Amino acid sequence: MRGKKNFVFAKVVTNVSHVLLFIGLNGFKGANRHMGPLKSMKYGSLLKAIYKFSMVHQNYGK
Image 1 (cartoon, one colour):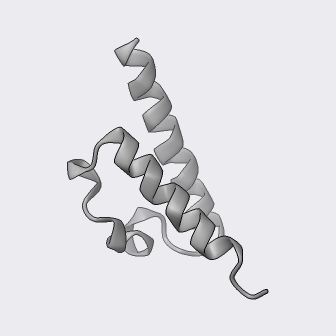
Image 2 (cartoon, one colour; image 1 turned 30 degrees about the horizontal axis):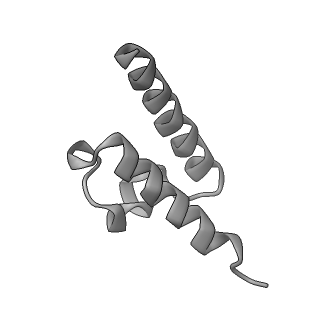
């Protein structure tokens, strides 16, 4: 079960990185500095930070 969680985590990080590159934010390098270093974050806190980030920017410009 633990291996499956690591695979899903890697897939989420990869997908988010691709999306950030697509919209021009250079992946995790510059866009997510406010989230803190990714190495020190746990899986749940990383997902929570990504969720908060997506909710904040979802209504931008309306």
